Length: 371
Image 1 (tube, rainbow, N blue to C red):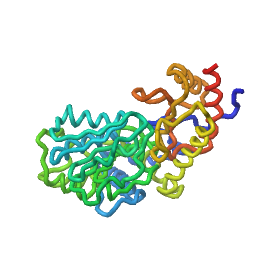
Image 2: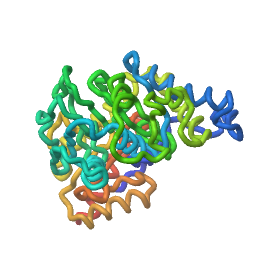
Image 3: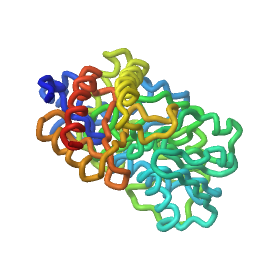
Image 4: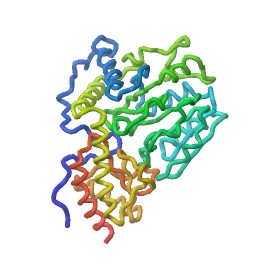
């Protein structure tokens, strides 16, 4: 039978993701609007975005946090263009975004000394192939595959190369081993449900040392430049952004950080996301027609949860349309390059009760299209 109860919040998109519970744009501190981002009030807000991020995430001493242009993509490409070429590079890719970084390295930067390790959707490549003397690029969580790295045991503590981690759908939802990571990138629009167009760049002291000691062979656009006269532009990591940011988006981000604090900080945000995944684990365990795209349990993402169904691709699309038409779940179709299925965002801004309320509708939609 068709269910009667619906999720209070039907927004399960994997980016931009659902706003936090209780969000109201009218509650944002908009004192910075109409002011220069270089004014005292503008710099204070941007500086707080950097400092509060470092505090809530518990970053090690000496790690720097900066706001950069063009979302997570801009942050990753900025660091690739600025750091790569000094050493051989190992790139691990198992979904569309990781594949994009591989394309950048091979077809745009045209790196000579490059090793690529790939795997199909649902699996991780052999991470043990990482050479500690090489730079390494990988996504922590494959947003379009629902597959995450379970740990960082494969990263050497004695590495001489740098680890560059695209962690956009992992930060604030997964336990990150910061000491193993030299560059971390993410965007506000994922686990915090923030707005798009801005990226976050976190650098370890080792990454800073590389930036100050190495000049790449190719030209760098102004928007990518992190050094001047051989020294890091420290202002970027104090709120002096490279280009003009949206101060409304900054206010939105600060609101999200305040919310993380209010629920108990990073551990509570991680716990919320993991609880959401547990709801779907129980569902999949009791449905013969639903499966996680991730092949290994400890590699199953707790944010971008990807499911395959025992249906034809057109039938899966019918399910997505049905749930959208019923205002039950928006934007839960699999990524266009991924196998046909559902992708249900389970980050910290999604309530467990809403995930539970979705499940009877999944049953109903499956029965409806499979008859």
